[in-house]
Image (tube, rainbow, N blue to C red; front, side, top):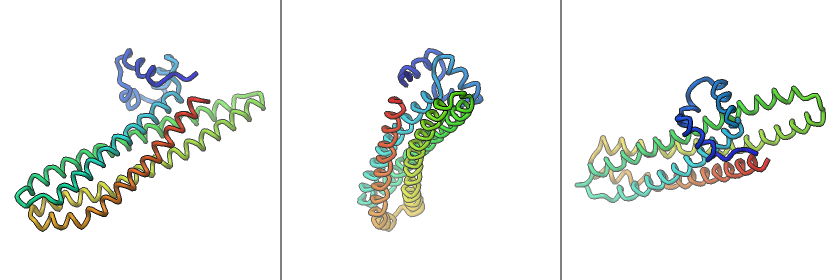
Length: 223
């Protein structure tokens, strides 16, 4: 039975090494061999990474919602508060950018481990001498790859949907910076509705990705 990811994190703490450090440092072979000594295999890491990617998308959703709310309040701020408006919107843009980068990093971690897992699985299938076992394992590999492909597509769509939101926010932050006057605030009102639509699309795609992540985790835990 696959270990719970909570158990895996506890082992990391006992080792005195953070999960992220283990994921991002050293070569893959050394990393996987070290973890397997503690009963942690690639599928355990994959499920854990999918959970992290899902969580980072949920956090990014909240950040984009907060940024949109802040944006909506900014467009009605009086001219005397333009400097404050710029500072607030700039902070939200920076936080949103950080959240988007976190989502992208988590997705990359998921993809890296998934590819390593599938490669190992294919190599081990070739070692079978029993044709029935070999066919059954190949079918399970194909099913898992298909499910992962659906998850990967959903995560990438979620990732891509962040770009137009960030681009709109950046344009308006720069416009405020370069034009701290009443005219700039008036121009922001013209783009607010479009930004609101982009954020709604972003949240919808992230919800789809999160749902697929939950199904993938459940399937992996059940198999």
